[in-house]
Length: 390
Image (cartoon, rainbow, N blue to C red):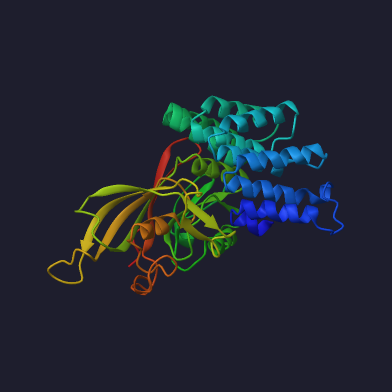
């Protein structure tokens, strides 16, 4: 069931569930012990945009008094929000509020559904409902920020972000950090920005910096192991929520430099946006693989041509090396690498998404996060830059 869920195979998940229920396996398929299988089936339906199947499974679970909780409702709401049925998702959310279900990831799923269609007022209502009962997490705050930004403008989103900053900053521990130590590029209260080297995983860098600074640092984003450049780290839980809210709210701006190979993308300063839905399988950055798929999540990548190089003179138009400045407008796994490969311009040194010739053309992946713009706890912007490695 988990494999079907992970690979977005909702039909096979429902077939497996039906097989379990019909086979003579001495399983009590109406008991709470069977609920995790049903949760996974609903989750698979959500990833496959089969909202009817998800709601039918939820109705069956309720009918036999099977345990339904945070995971169950979150998957069902996500299934509806992945289609045009966001009003069904909102109706389900309202039902849960009336039943006084404890706030959980179903609240974040509901706010995300609102964000997809620009229903900022409903998203804000969910935010206020959760705030009255418990602490808001970064993911929920991010969905509301994104909804406000796209519907009411960046100024409204920043006003809420500043309120969150005032609420979360008192719990942020003080950390003494010297610029330049442990690859530190710059720092603000609660936020340390470091320069990650190619070949080091984000997780190992996090552990090394936590030990160096004597505090448990947290991640709000990551860079692939072969990618180098700017990486922000949060000092403690509250700062982690603040950074997560910014990333989830799409308020952070990241610029990458990469060298790719293929046909010309136009003259110098030519620009375009790649818009292709991406589907990721795998549970971590090491084993994850991403493909362009109609059932994937929306993804957009903007690029500008910075320089062009040829192997011979006169130029061979069919094949050149192109230096790009790239800005991901969404944050999907391996997004830049997959998007450029999908238009026939894989990044040099990419052994996963490039051809063998392109993969061996550079001793490392030629992808570098050069610039990052985010907000400190006062709501003011600050920028960190990392030079392209020699």
